[in-house]
Image (cartoon, rainbow, N blue to C red; front, top):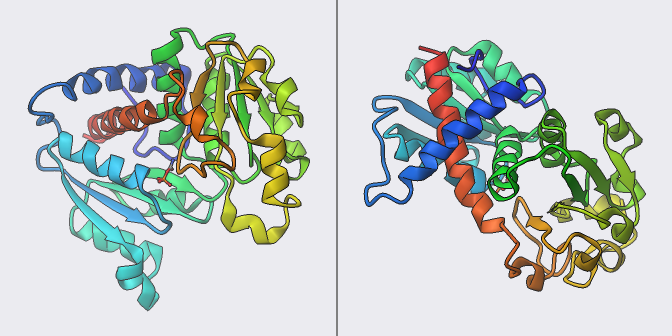
Length: 306
Ligand code: CP
């Protein structure tokens, strides 16, 4: 059983708690092959999606997960809500609490926002990505996908490519993989890899070929084009020349290397279309697994908050 009201990050979850989430997700994934892809576990519960930043996968995945658990879902697009009239986060939280929301799934550009909300409302708060801090459900679905394909995570070499410094996905992946004994290497331009990332127990590389040597998994991060104006790397052309993952560069990794990308992808920039289509690319499986993981989180938090 989870001993937490909310899911704010993976840092404070134990390996045992993460295993419980992954094992619960296996059972829920079984529901997807039924003709009726629905169970009554959360009938009568209300899940609110509160996204202050754009999202396709995470927001829709939570919506589908909640529906498959028979919960009611309310989607709040902040650009169409009273946020634009200056309503504060806490006041929105209190409004949702007054409507008897059981869960609030929040994405926000500022790290720590889900924690502030969680401290102020009785509903379970789930972090759907906060600034550069964490994206715990992405970390969990990535871990699930690795375990499903490669069984044992301990000892695997996992290479995370790209904008590590700005990536909440990288942080949650590293936290989860460390707990399971994987060896994580991060690779990208020096300007996108803060030295402080070493404190998370990862190896740093700046050369993609060297980083990929003997890799079991390569997780390719999206280049955040919206940060291009900050001149963190000389040009997209240079980034692509040095760090785009192609079938040729993958020859430096193990033949069976598992290819992952959290999405959304910039095809031709950080990943080539040929790589997306390789048989060991599991990018669509990650999306499917995301629903099972989010069903497991909603279910386990509902039990913990009974
Ligand atoms: N992986 C991910 O968080 O994608 P979205 O931004 O579409 O939710």
